[in-house]
Image 1 (cartoon, rainbow, N blue to C red):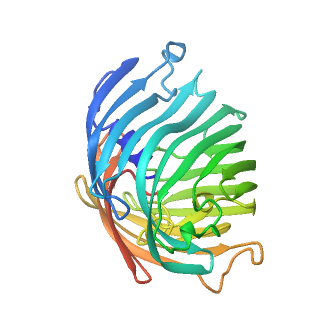
Image 2 (cartoon, one colour):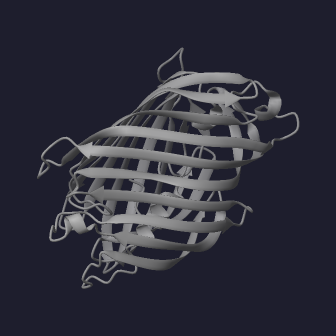
Length: 361
């Protein structure tokens, strides 16, 4: 969900470039953003930045961050959220994830080729996601490689569906709610020159979820998923960057609809509602050209194309979905080049405005 980037990004806003890092620093923060899924959202957050005593004197050791946030949206949605990322022992260990509770509402548009007019549904769900890695390479200019374990639990309680709609009919796996539990393996490689606004390098996150369990009123199912999310960054001029993102996801078994591969949202094919298209498999290619305008102000143009697939066809390449758009950037933290993001995306019979913190990829 988009909020993770927003909260973690805002934690660096309050740190002046010349501040001597403290071992523990806590920042209270306002929280305001806009997406098609929430409309205007507002709230408050507090972020703790931690540097462990074991890493004292190591300028290459990354700081750890924990954020607690509460937001309420114009669509009467409630989000209580605790994202975290922890580096320990000179970056030898890396963990990230979230714990949260959401009272949310979404539009459902169908699954795969079975598309329906938008159906509003409401859902309450606590969620825990944990990714714990250990460095398995020496690091250096070619990047740092981590390997580890992943775990997730999510109690997706669907409280309201449209009368006579497809979602509440009992034919959509998880349409009346589901409890998702399971784990898997992961690889993470980071060769970026900077975290928030890279100008060169590559970052890759590969995940394999093995036979995760989804218990629903219709019965219990299991599914496995292999996914890869890779972004590369290319400096075309002194301040011009081309960013390219590749994403692929392959699912076997029967996953609940809320755990399928999705297109749309703040990160993947901006211009489409989050989950506007969903199916077992997905592949997405996105590019973004990032340009300076004046001092802290920048601009971007972006475009992408994605395709979905299922057991019968790995990907339906004859029916891709494309989106494009443009946006502005304002650097709120010059030290780390953290940007406030304003994007307007256009898809097929669809559009979306996004105001968040941090880049899409």
